[in-house]
Length: 486
Image (cartoon, rainbow, N blue to C red):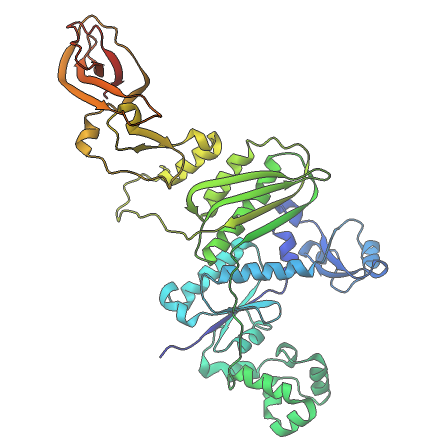
């Protein structure tokens, strides 16, 4: 019988992490605080490690902080940004479970019991979650319990705790009431009675607790212990990705734009992995002070979702853009998110370790040389050589089935226009092959030709023709060169 296990990712410093993750490493080491409140009474709501070491802390007034420390950076606390990043992490967690919930404060919870068959036993699954959270740049507490309410409460006091049904009541009993998720007024009232842990609260007469503190306390205890199932609304990822980074100062160097670009493409890759999709077209907007943003459009031949590839392609396009002014912000928008089909691979990879996969090489060439510089050759069912091969930059163009033996009889190098063959002696190897076609085609000329394979006096193998019914000379006079064989 499958049992449900809920993991809680508690994010105690989400607002601060959302700011720090977008800063270069050197800037993260400097004192920085988040502030909120009216202009006359600004208060610190979060401080990084360097600011705390200097004596700044949550709840300290900004004026007092400025008297205490002369130089530190301030960033406005933005509740909307905090919610945005919580949704981003929910989208990331969606790749591991279809049951992801955002209803608990400062956390996301996800059901992992049914995911263990796919991602392996919990220690291995846990390691993967931790590695990816570290790469995303967020601090967290991670706990696992039989129900989501208990997992959220235990995350207030524990990091790395994973318990089953048999140990749930014991672990909850050791929780202080401050960590149990109860209303602060209820916690204060119980503390004055000498009740400071959930075990002490559970030992009190249930009817008396309900009468004095309300049915909400009893309902919360029932959800904690799993006696009542917690109704949850599950997260569903949107079909659009939109992320923006605002700079603290004007950026004029293209190299300085690479760090935020790497962060944006990595976040896009994490989002795509969460919804099991890919991206085929997205846009990076370089925002300026008083002029419109500079768009950088990245179009792919096929859907991709690997972060390093998305960054590399974006960097190639960015290096080609003439930026008209200093950049104050960067925004990445992806509206086209098709399904992603991984490329098939051989069981035994024959490619050397240093070699680059063809799809990645193709996209890199397009980003550096331009979309029209890299194209594919399509075989068309037309006997005329100049119409049998066509170049296309679209992956979706149809490929026609043409007999392989006919392709093998054609040269690998076609001239754009036939030229007169100038030689003193040729040896006829094959032919003539008469081609009469195109009388119906108004876009190209009708042809009536006899084709030969010849060897020139220099030993080169060529494909040549003369007009139908005309006998070429032994020295090759009157022959038109169409292409060369390899």
